[in-house]
Amino acid sequence: MSGFEVISSGIFTLLQDKGRFNFTHLGVTTSGYMDEYSAFFCHKLLENNKDSNLLEIAFSNVILKATASTTIAITGAKCEFFINDIQKSIWQTHRLKKEDIIKVGKLLEGQRVYLGVKNGFNIKKEFDSYSTTIKESLGGLNGQQIKKADFLPFDSFNSILNRRVKNKYVSKYSDELTLRVVLSYQEDSFLKKEKDKFFNSIYEITPDFNRMACKLSGEKILSSRNGIISEGIAFGSIQIPNDGQPIILLKERQTIGGYPKIGSVLNIDCFKLSQMKIGSKIKFEEIDIFSAQEKMKKFYSIFS
Amino acid sequence: MNIKIASVDCVIIYFEEIISKEISQKVKSAYKILKDLNNSAFIEIIPSYNSIFIKYDIFKYDFNSIKLFLKSSLADIKEFENSDSSIINIDVYYDKEVGLDLEIVAKNANLSIDEVIKIHSSTIYDVYAIGFLPGFAYLASIDERIITPRLKTPRKKIPKGSVAIADNQTAVYPKDSPGGWNILGKTTFEFFDKNLDTLSPILIDSKIKFNPISKEEFISQGGVI
Image 1 (tube, each protein chain N blue to C red):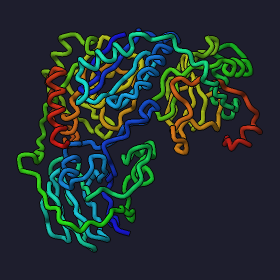
Image 2 (image 1 turned 120 degrees about the vertical axis):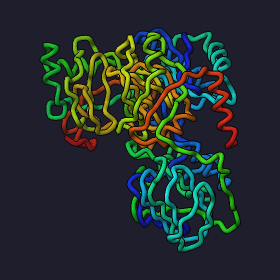
Image 3 (image 1 turned 90 degrees about the horizontal axis):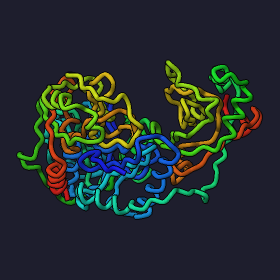
Image 4 (image 1 turned 135 degrees about the vertical axis):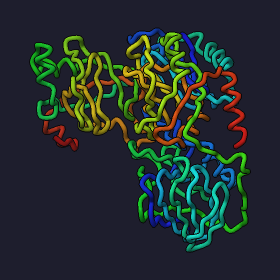
């Protein structure tokens, strides 16, 4: 069979796609790529279908051995990347032949590397998606992260596909980020002085940062309400729990929840957030819904 | 009805801001109308107690046009009637050995354990929301006599299949999970089942009744104490 033998898996390597949307009414989270920008660029390089899958790699030391020829692409976090011990560039495609060994070493800037293969990995979708959600045991290989000795099947590919992302499109990561926010949900339960505080403070990313949510610390924000009736939660929504410290809800958030929300970070800014490290500084900036929707359309048009 | 921004590509429709059977039925009627539209621009629809959340395709609608579209689609919500939805009967082994809080609930209510069981199992429950965990259905309303607050300290692990109550709601834990609800008994009924195409036999418009069974029956159904 053609594919990758997993020689070393890294601690947290997941098969992902754009997410599982048809079962949220039953409490099933969407999951999906934390950084769609890098993931979609990876597929674009490979001329893959946008519904395809790839590996999201959050820790170093992933070593894979190809059992057939293929073309791969690698995007996302700046990392040390080797083919047969020779260092190679990322944000581009690479041809592999049988027996080639690839290695994702240290992550230098950013938190998540995206590694795709031409035509995607040959696995079955589970409930309409390849996305792995470990807590639900859904998707990927048996609903789990990739482990040593797993096999990642792909169809061998022998044609030439040689592409690289233009430098200006390659993500750069720093330790400061401004997130654009549309006011939403219970925003009217926050007095003007609370909103002013929220938009004029600098927050810090705490260690409570994972695929589910990103908890910040900084200036306390008060809602005039303690709790609300549980309701559907959007990607990027900013919950203000009773301790006043904002929580940005991400891809593996619960589907419904009962904390007041002041606004929602633009999806396309959450993708940047997902590459930030703990301790980074976060600022918020208000944007109106129509400009926000234009920005989103512009973003997704790159990949259509 | 009030339609608000939930995020750049999501809206939320609020009905009145209370939890009641009447509002829940409005939600269910509206949810059914929206589902029946089969509109490919709706990416997710999540009904809850008094709201419906929708993620939509912003290449097809902007916030203004989705708002108009939803308003006109839902202009005429009829009272929801799920007469065709049959009652789902769920066998429960109610006993202290699996219902760790039966005694406390009974004491709190000034009733005997048998009375608590009888009261809990004689109501037909409506689903008000599904979430927290996949297949976790919030069922209401339980009889006022057995209303019990959540545990002060949640348990680290509530076993899968536990039938529990908190405030005026009841639910079945679809898998092992931390939780603060009062456990009355246990069932082998699967609320989240990967063998089903629908993933869960319970939907927002389901009606549910619990049926007390003996330990022997519970064991014969594959129940584990």
